[in-house]
Each structure stands twice: as structure tokens, then as C-alpha cells.
Image 1 (cartoon, one colour):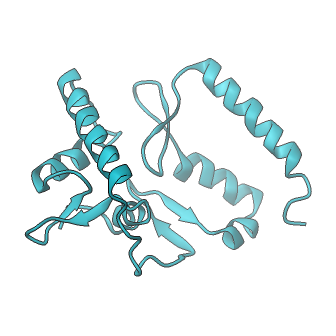
Image 2 (tube, rainbow, N blue to C red):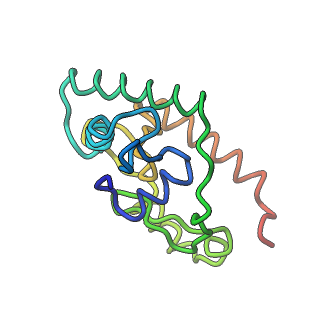
Length: 159
């Protein structure tokens, strides 16, 4: 098995990103076992990488995405709805009822400590998946405008 946390495994299974190779080893769809181990290592946003590492990750990511498009992996039956699931890098995801019952203080803490990570390269990342949310101040301002618009639309949500 790949060296994934329980939360990472749950996340990748839900995204149908994992399968097994001919020897029964867990791999990312479209990658060999060795590539899968390296791909997982290179996907960690908390690490600093060389340009060569970034290019290697991009090559493997393209192979993985193409393989997922061409051969959809069936969703595992063991994926169940969970109230509090670790989804990798120490982050937690909550279901709708849990989020609806959160206090504003708890939700603010969730945003600051679980949802976003300000990367040391000056990028705002989603902790759930590690992908960048914004890489410039203007992008953060655009995100704020978007979220303010959503807040207006949701004024009566959950009431």
C-alpha cells in the first residue's frame, strides 16, 4: 500500500484516483507503483521542490489525469459519509449538518486552521488537496468578492 494517511486514502478513493496494479499494490490510476510513491511525495505542498521536481510532478499528473479520463475507476463501496474525516496533511472535512451546527467562532477556526494554508512561497492553498487557491493579492481580492456574493445569496440558508 502507498504511504497514505487514512484521510488521504479516503480522499483519493472518493476522487477515484487509486487502483491496484497487476501485483495487487495500491497505485494512482495511470502510474506504476514507483511513480505513485514519487507522485505522492511530490504532491506535498509543505515541501520545497526544484524545477526538475515540479516538471516530474506535472508529467506524472498529466499521465494520471489522462488515465482517469480514459478508464474511469469504479467508486469503492467502502467510501461512506463521515462527520469528521481527516483528508490529508492534518486537515479535517465536515458534513453539512455538522457545519450548519458550528458556531461562528468554530467555523472561523476551521477556516484558519483546517481549510486554508498560507504557503511559505506566498500562495494560499486549500489544505484539502493542497492545490493553490490564490497566488497574488489581486486573486485573494477576487476570491473575497466572489465569497461576498455567495454570502449575499446564502443569507437565508440554514434558517
